[in-house]
Figure: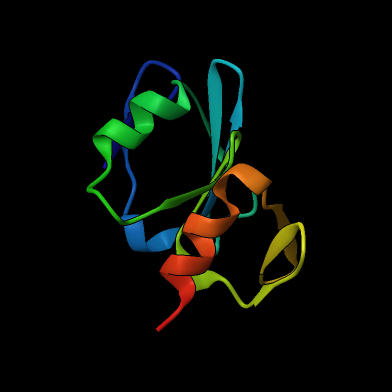
Length: 101
């Protein structure tokens, strides 16, 4: 996947994505082994259209996660490593269905 980043394009390997956080007209892409997230001006909907289907799952209106990185599911959030990601009621059933073997 290629995203714009300060007047240049950055290639992002989808397998390196820990999670994605939406911030109105911007998104932060948190990557494995990189301390700072990649910040780009793009909507969550536009990003979802660029990604292959089924790679990342929406857990909240502002979060996309790769379900393969989820280590625990609690009532209102998912755990990826040491980070807690919100899990809204709207997306909960879909996420739980996709996590079941």
